[in-house]
Length: 287
Image (cartoon, rainbow, N blue to C red; front, side):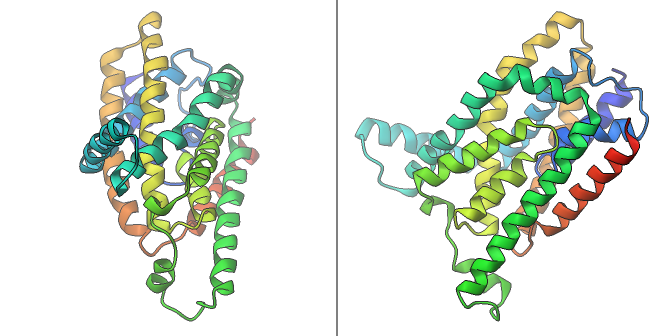
């Protein structure tokens, strides 16, 4: 792929990965809509996408570096002690429990799901499904808010009645981790579906976003270990691809900073309508 196309895909991936709109769906659909010189069946396409995701994971590691340091220390401490005593230790175990389903399902269904990456119409259809998931999650949250009798309260006050991520149960973490596995389908957003799972588990929007971002990091790093080495067997322009990963990381950093602020008061609805619209355009245009 050309320097220009890889740079474009890097910025696109970094800008969309953490938004609940599916970076993979965008990487398949948008270049086809723009009639770019792009072949999603290229054997280096999936390894390139994973490399771009590593740029995103690096941005998340930078943003949450203090959290990861405390959680790693807490996990070692809890392992030696054989007991979970504080929030950092609990958070580390929640992330481990939440990571397992996506890792297992990804290994089992990896080859079958890769065949979907070259189909723009399939990705467009899943973008519409993603929009429906986001709308459904917000509809359930609004119904719960009405049930709690808080309809007249300020948005911030409503959020205060929901859980922080360290109060999440382990079965709920498994559920959210299982939701993350659905992001293997192009068009289903990892951030969106894990946030939807977090809302269903009673988390605040801001906390659901935080858990989603933290949960994505180990899965992306593991995928990188499996997929990126394949680039060496296809004479890929590694320097160009690394530049794409750097651009993805920069875009992801600013996206994450924006979303951390946005979900203090914002909802998933705008992204749901956007995904549905993009998916509809893709189905209408791509042949």
